[in-house]
Image (cartoon, rainbow, N blue to C red; front, side):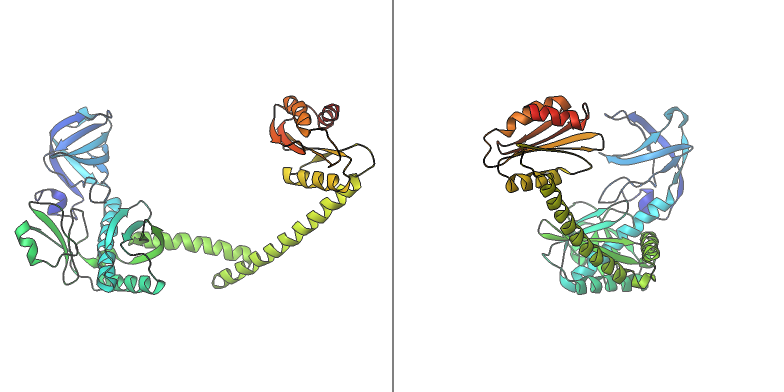
Length: 391
């Protein structure tokens, strides 16, 4: 492990190596094994590297038993003897920034609040750590972020050292090391000492900056989401674009966008309440206009929701207890209906549903007092109403 190129020189972007073997795994993916490699395999929370071997794409790298497999997209027969490897360096350096940033932020939480990290995930957009605490305040988050960025600004070296189990006692480790044998420590002097097999820049300054984005509860812990380095600029650019668009639509400066949006939402809620009240009043008016002295009240509508049909039907039968209300609406190529009876009517509305549903290939349900259903426009609204009256 010590001799692997990605440990020997973490900044190495290109290298030459000899093909040792070729193979196909159980998923029919083709791979090669090299005499040495700068390609980091998935492990320790860090994703694998990508890049090329000669002209072929390396799409995955995994450590299987004692060999590092480079999964290739293309014809393996073109790879033989000595090959030239080239890393997708922006991807690798991004992973190095995020991984080192995680070490720094984790150590800051331990130093300030004795909050240990119990898990770590390096995602394609954000990084998360789960802290073994139940709650955390905004002030604590700000303090940890500030401490982490101070360590970055000091541009401390990030060192690595291979030690034996017996030598571990010479270091103030942040947490116990689970592996045995030769152990690789990643060290930020006078700040963080941690066993880790991942790749990191050679100094904290190369992490550039850390920004915490948010938190959430996660199985009794607190999950902290953050970004480092170039991802901070990407995140800032995205948020700037969104904020500028919101401010433009509100016709206010960006700094006033939140206040203006709050006013808009408050006005919208007031308008929605007024509109709901007006619709309720309109439904009451329509129901009263439909009430007559006959035994059946029918009406056909366009673009009425099921809830509106039900409200109108209830209003009709509560106003006139000797009638049946049959209502149909056509909505975007579908038919919906409601049938309701007054308290003085003995006929079951389920009979109406049984008559109507087959005509429209529909589904529905209800009680003896009220039924509802919907289906296809295989008949017209008027034809459906006529069939419901005949039930």
